[in-house]
Length: 225
Image 1 (spheres, rainbow, N blue to C red):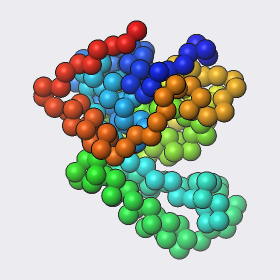
Image 2 (image 1 turned 120 degrees about the horizontal axis):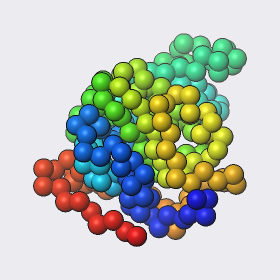
Image 3 (image 1 turned 90 degrees about the vertical axis):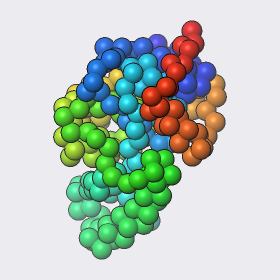
């Protein structure tokens, strides 16, 4: 399916929801989205599966001087994951890690309050968790999310994305019980190349979709062909 191009995140989410149909109508399934771009995708998945939708806010802890290199991450619920290999190799002090965690923690709490209205971990223990994003390039953020979720003891952890780099899939596979990817091209340059419309997702759209997904009267969106 490497030729598949998604019209937008909603279209990608509808196709992803079909691929996850085996999880539909189960009381033990929760869909978690990585905000912001993962939320429009996950909204469609959650609606098709008739499952609750929540977000898992994750903030990468960048190495001082190399912010793109992750020395760890923090996530909703006070979960902290440290990459011991990076920390030891670069001799990063506990104080530097704590400074980064405090800084990123402020943004994490802001996003939790903006999207969910409260802080704290989503209800994960004993549930089947389907973790959704709009795509995976390096995999650093979603890897941190998967490690954080493992600390919360789900019954089964599934990562589901419309498109991902093959290298990232190889890294993530051992961390989860199932990895669902619709498009896994060999020539992967960026997530955006597999979408006709990859415009930025605003905070307001995130909160609106979360409210609609969890409303008792939430309608099922029409599935595009």
